[in-house]
Image 1 (tube, rainbow, N blue to C red):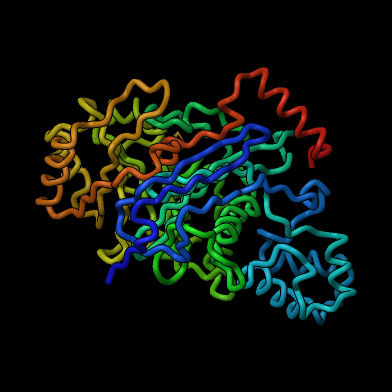
Image 2 (cartoon, rainbow, N blue to C red):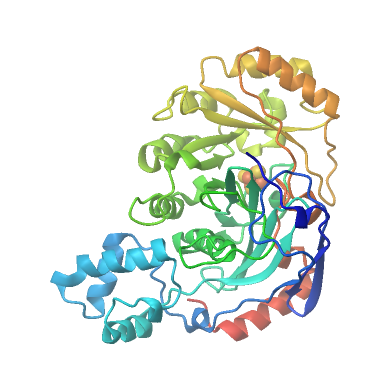
Length: 446
Ligand code: SF4
């Protein structure tokens, strides 16, 4: 049975955060979604400081995001005897991914001498949190900062946590910015800075679990909206910033670690990778990673999709749907999700709905209808609600599940297609100053 904590019936909680030296104040108001709330004293101020970690600036390589083999090689390099390597890798794997530690000193069953060696050679520190925002519907958005890498400067990305009754979904990013320019997407207006590494992709999950108290010794922040039972992060969607299949190897490594049964142990059925349609990598995704697939479809005619999702010019609809039909493991129990953003007078007619049904004929599919989430500078408008419902009904009657996605986190620009990191919103002069400051703090590019 669903519960609701009365202390939060009329929530009047201020959450005070810092973005560099600008204070950011968010107000949480009444949240009508019915969900139980863990720990619920009323009227509490939660302060999330700018979280920094000096170990990140050391330039030491991280153990996070290494495969078991790579971790074994790294241990051998610092003198761990070969016959102990496998056992030590298992020990570390458990501390990093089951216990969620981010400090070697907490690895209590590892001899002090080895901990000192590990500390001297590696880091397991989390990235910095620059800002944490909480929507009035309980959605959380974090702005995270990673130290300089290939692009030669620190970078920031956003990730979003969407709590619902029964599950908590983390939307994570695969790139900083995006090289594609889907015209309805805010991220698409931010140029590609670089790919994220496997470490950085995994770090998003680790950090979210830290912040939500989702590791064994963690505690959930007072007043946080989380599922009433089970994991607080139960699902991952790779639908944040970037095209994951343009960063295939790092995404693959990160997702295989996230779904490793002796570690973070997320079910592959609860991990969804969303692509705009990088056809050559679609089969590999099913074959080598084995997670659920989502396609950013948004149009059913090539001429329109060429405009909305320009990668369509390279991989048109016919090739895309053919790749979907051949997705490994595809069945009625493992359907592909097709994302369809509802744009007023652009792609929302009943004729479009008919063509959609024809296009997907024979493909085990679910169609997620996404009311367009506006962002500053866009020319698109969200379809009228009545039109969205008509569209949904038509598809539903044709036998396809067609849920209309409830917009979440619109007030903090955390909704689908709205992500864009703060550093990229700055004016150019501000950004250059920011980058210079960060490079001075973090040292040279690694
Ligand atoms: S929808 Fe995805 S692929 Fe397209 S611009 Fe946005 S982030 Fe990039």
